Image (cartoon, rainbow over all chains, first blue to last red; front, top):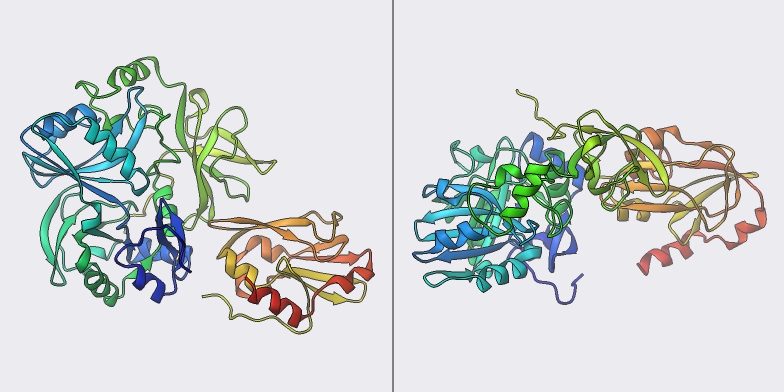
Length: 352
Length: 131
């Protein structure tokens, strides 16, 4: 099935050959699952899986004043990074809302790589480009790269990589393909994201799959990230929600100046009116994005947890009912279903 | 992986991908192989209560996968006599065996003439082929 007007990653043919169910996602035709969301999810928790995330955007920000530009636009403190380090950070708007959440990789004193969400590629790029200062250049290089996430307890050994600190990166070769090895991910497991030139993607994918790594789609990517409470932009965080209410205050260096910082300082000072909480269903039901939470609040993400075998979700609730243990009622298509707030993350890996 | 694609010849079908096994003045209902395959691994069956009334062409319950929820349409009208607890406790049994262990409810038919509206297996296969 070909879907008109949708972009395809360099691995599209591989996904179709594997029998993936392809769906539109953020303007891309992407695999939502191959054999099934649950077996793919379990493969990542117990062994390893590989995800094609080439739809994500890559921007190069370069020039002698690039740090100054990014310090003014991103919430986290980029000056804490050394070459080879990376940081989760937010692109904020004037009211402290979140234009995008992204990872900044410091390549050098005059060069940062930003990896942004596919759905926000245009918005984030225009935001940055419109604010360029002399001595900086922002370039959208998304189409030049493929990005493969290899995640799970056996991910590193399968790639011949040793352990390394999270949020670092280095150039290297994996199965003979030159890649940027990024020690980042969206699953809560050990693993890496491998960035390579688009034309090498098939060779890298084939070599990874040949080691017995399970191909995983966006379905498992979503259930994995929600179990560990990583927010999804567009669901849990948006241009209308702020980092403090979302529990992302740790990504905001409120002692420096950046877009929307005054508003974020005020929210921090006054305390947020609502908070993004994680919850687990006490009754058999699957919460979904947009469902009302009785007494004020909305589910922003929901699914069935393959590890816990119950409905789980995140949503904004009034701060006075946001502490772990508080009972919530989710309106599931007109039926009230009991849930309770839990500490994040929802799923904690057992130490082996 | 779940079961192989099958559509038993002894069942009656509804074009919304539901089946009925007629047993005298009662019928056992479920969803077809095509329906469970389209939804993916099921994680929840929201069942009706015993004594509720199922109405032909209307929803009597919901089946839900990790990614999607779908109404279950009743191919026939009647009173709910029994619900399959196994389908509630282990919804994956609907994927594994949609016409056997994964049946959903048993009803007492209130209007046996409705049987004339249902599809035989050949007619239902034609519906599937158009999807």
